[in-house]
Length: 338
Image (cartoon, rainbow, N blue to C red; front, side, top):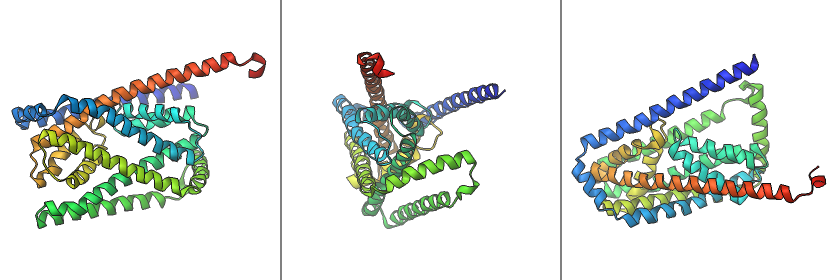
């Protein structure tokens, strides 16, 4: 009976995942359809026409090289929690996650792909879980920090009334985020089921290992901020060709905020939501919705292309690793294996 129940639960889970994927793809199609319906398409295509092909060709390898830094940051945290994850394996897992972020339901789907593969390759599953959770948390803080720096600078580009509105929104968002974190930390462990308590005990043990290396956490946060700021600059580079002429600090505010909006799991990989958010966020700075959407879609093209290449690299690294493992087993004497 237990196996039948587990099989039914698994089938139900797969069905829900498929429905969610269909709904999210439908959400992207609807939002993009509305954007193309209400925006002047001739101006939109003219903006795309100003973007040289060489920009996208150069942007994809730059995007992948930049995310090598992200793989290093993630491995730094996993191994600080005694995860025992190798460098090549970390790149394989991280690039698999990049592929999943684009082509699986919601951006968070990539995190599950990355962590799930890492649990097979690392020495400690708890270390992978804790390191991955901390990595995602630090990414959110890095986005908030970059957006905060931009928020401190953007009032120069806004009328006083608009500046007060945006500053108020930034403060409100910070208070809500801190309140949510405090609420999560306030939940007592004794209210959790026994299985969850055991998992929590393992995570706390790895957390104590992680606490011994505060320098790694600070370094990871600094790397995360540099990564997010560089991605914002890549967007500014693409936007300049499209026709967006605003100071760089405006991008430091607008792009992280649009990226956060894409985390809402109503579209596939945030496609559509990010572009609509860019149009709304750029409006106070005098940037037309057409140019904002064009820049967002151009960057999305780079993300899709980079995700496909990342998936191919991860697959190649996996095959190389499997061949090396098989070769090592064949070269080991049978009595040594026993």
